[in-house]
Image (cartoon, rainbow, N blue to C red; front, side):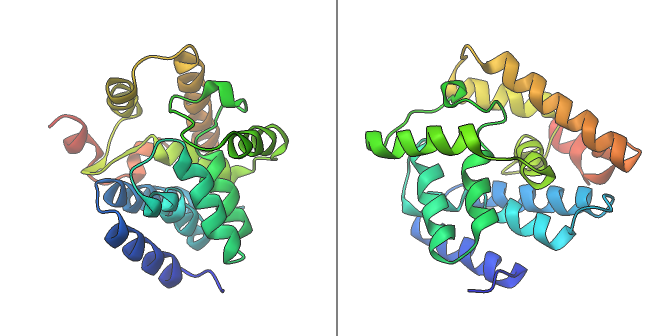
Amino acid sequence: MLLTRHTAENALREAEAANPGPWANHSHYVAQACENIALRCPHLDSDDAYIYGILHDIGRHAGITSEKHLIDGYRYCLARGWEKAAQICISHAFMVKDISSSIGVFDMPQEDKDFIEQFVKYAVYDDYDLLVQLCDALALPSGFCLLEKRFVDVTIRYGTHPATIDRWKVILGIKAHFEEIIGCSIYDLLPGVVENSFR
């Protein structure tokens, strides 16, 4: 199946209908952030960036789960021939390339956890993987926000973890990486980020 913006948006609508929740609005904002930043990156395609952003949590179509949504999203995309989107369904959760850095619960059979462990270990991340990791941390269901607000939001919901600080450091490093490419603050490209962060 050809992966286009229209196809990806339809997939998200169907997934939201199957499992309604704030995750869908979050996905829309992740996609918009990916597109806005990619438009300033000569080596990235903004449509692809938008698509990968909107599909990164598509595994949530299968219900309310923790890390199981990663493998569900991977299988959903792979079944449709969307290989890079499938990778990002897993890679977006592992900015630290070690599944012990997960802040969620591996609510899945052991063989699925083993698959994710090997997948993450050997996956080669490119700037699309990094962009979705960054934008995942810039988007609340209500809109764009400062990274630090999202860090606190996630920590309140999931608690602290031995890898929490390392995860934050990687995301801040990715922010610096893209800001060097685009020549400005990423926040300049996120409409309403100040208002949404402080309301």
